[in-house]
Structures are given as structure tokens and as C-alpha cells.
Length: 321
Image 1 (cartoon, rainbow, N blue to C red):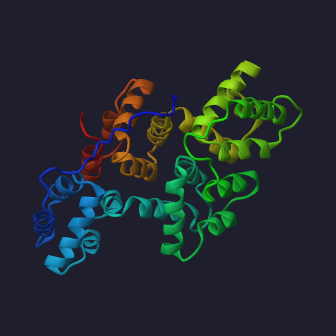
Image 2 (image 1 turned 90 degrees about the vertical axis):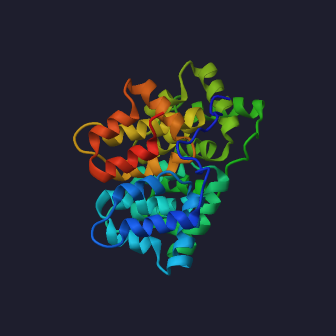
């Protein structure tokens, strides 16, 4: 199973951890004239999210203050975005990013694809529940008001958690599904998009891997080639994301990170979101994949695209190893 890999994080729980001592050190870093940003980076970028929650509780309990409010009043810009992002529980952080992608004029479909197409059913459920709790509005309803057509139908299928559980495999069905994909796309004039999104949103990753192999045997072409020939726009982006996550999730995120920094200007929101979101999951795998794909390290590219405390925080999360 090529999608299966051993996730290697870059941020792990600190071994000799003392929430009260960290809370006191953070208060000291922000008290009085000026702020010791390096002390904040040294503590918060080297603790797991669970440990950061404990520090936050100790800060309130022992100092009678709100750590996040204090951080917000002392920090600014993209550095603040990184530190405040680190302080949020992971699923709440993803909800905030989804909300930001849909709030106001226009929708950032790329962010919706990146988050929703890379989550397993279990994580989707947590995000859906948290979203409604945080914004008093169902995620499905918000998505439906911001998207349309086949793209909307695909995202809706993902967030109702209709994907078969991991390990669900039926080789005979895989042959049938490969034929259905061919007949819905390359085997006819025009494209029946519904067949594509129903199969890719429902089948387990194990099953999809078999389907993609059967498709190649049947047509001599990869599923990526078929998608490129038959689909376009957001639906193509979303289904391609699912295919990449089936084949190798770190590859998908390495590509997103490279795109965020390639060319003129930097997509800081994407850079921050992926580095925070994957730091305790598989950022080491993403780093390895990045170097293999682009012949340069993620660390060196981030160094060249960022500056100041913002740069130092990201580099601390990426790690030198």
C-alpha cells in the first residue's frame, strides 16, 4: 500500500516538561518594556499542542492572565499568526482556516481542497462538530453557500464522512469501478463527473489504490492523466488532491509548500497552515519528499522567503534534522 507510510513529526512532546515553569518564563518574556520573542519561540515551538494547552491553563491558574490575549497584545504580523496558530487545538485551527477561506468576498477554494481532501473520516467528523460549535453554523451549510456544482457535491460527500473505513477492499469491485471511471470519461464523449466524485469520495484509500492500478491495466493511462484530460477547475484540483493523498500524502503537501513559495511573492497563509498543521504529524516526511522532488531543502527555501521572528518560528518548527 503506497499511501501507507510511517508519519514522522518534527515537533514532539518536550521530555522534561513543566507547564508552570514555561508559563512563568513566557510571562517574563512579555513583561515590562519590550518582548523577548526568542524566548517565546524557544518554548512554544518546542512543545506539543497538548503541552501548550497545559501551559495556557497554568498561565491562567497561576498568573490570573490569558496567555493568548497576552501574546496577541505583544506580537504582530505573520509571527503572531504562527504563535497564535500553535496555541489552538489542531481541529479548531483547521476550522478557523476553513472559515477564513469562506468568509467575506470570494472563496479560497485551494484551502478548502487542501484541508478537506486530506482528512480521514474521523478527523472530518471532529472538524465538522467543532466548526458548528465555534461559528454557530453547520460547515456543510457554509460550504454550500460558497461553492457550486460538482465541486460542492464532492465536498459535501467528504464532510458527511461517507468514505469507507480504512482497510475496506473488494478487488472485483475495483475492476468494476475502473471500468465505470473509463466509461464516464475517456470512453465517451463528454464527462460524467458524478461517477468520478462518487467513487473518489466513497472508496477507502486501500480500495482506491486498487482502482487506480486496475485503471492503468485497463487503459494504459494513469488516473492522473485521465483526470487531466476529462476535468478542470476546482473539481479537478480536489480529485487530484485525493489521488495524491492516496498515493503519498507528504508528496501532496510538499507540492503545496513549493507552490506557496515559488515565483514572485509568498503565500504565507498556506506556508503557515501546512507547517503548523503537519508539524506534529508528518512534517519530517514532507521535508524528505520536498528535497527529493525539488533538489533543495524545505528549510533553505523557507529561509529565503521569510524574515525576522516569523522566519525563526517557522525554522524552529521545521527543525534542522
